Length: 153
Ligand SMILES: Cc1cc2nc3c(=O)[nH]c(=O)nc-3n(C[C@H](O)[C@H](O)[C@H](O)COP(=O)(O)O)c2cc1C
View 1 (cartoon, rainbow, N blue to C red):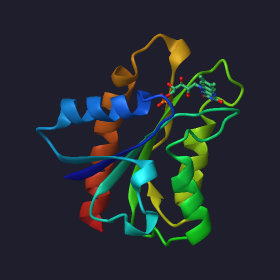
View 2 (spheres, rainbow, N blue to C red):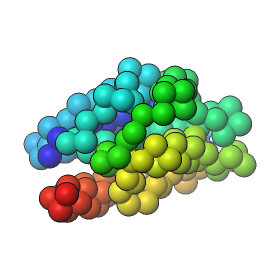
View 3 (cartoon, rainbow, N blue to C red):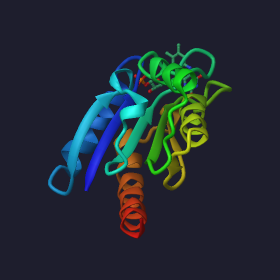
């Protein structure tokens, strides 16, 4: 299937995780990777499954590369009906605002009409788990759900 991996990052961890996902699954799917900063929300295509990886910064805010995307969605109010996405967060439970960046982004996409596939989960840097060990099984499940949903459409 066509999968667009989008990262919202401040220091590169989310981008690295997108690259890891691509390397792990590249034989199975056609991937495109982009920074959210480079995405025009109105041009997001419904025939590709969008998988977003996004951290949190500041006080539960969006990281630098996700903020311009969120601003564009809020300003231009694109109709994202038909767009299917899944979202994986990176965060640190030492912050009271654990995982808020990916939470905000998911809410924004759903409010614009997009359909979220499966649950958002947030990798906690405090857990001691590697982000990819949490993300790979999550990704496999979301892709299966997206394939079923996109076949039915
Ligand atoms: C200054 C600073 C603020 C942060 N704020 C939050 C936060 O509010 N909530 C959270 O869950 N994680 C927070 N984090 C943790 C980051 O989200 C985490 O380190 C993540 O792996 C960074 O990924 P990135 O390199 O893709 O931005 C913060 C980290 C730093 C350094």
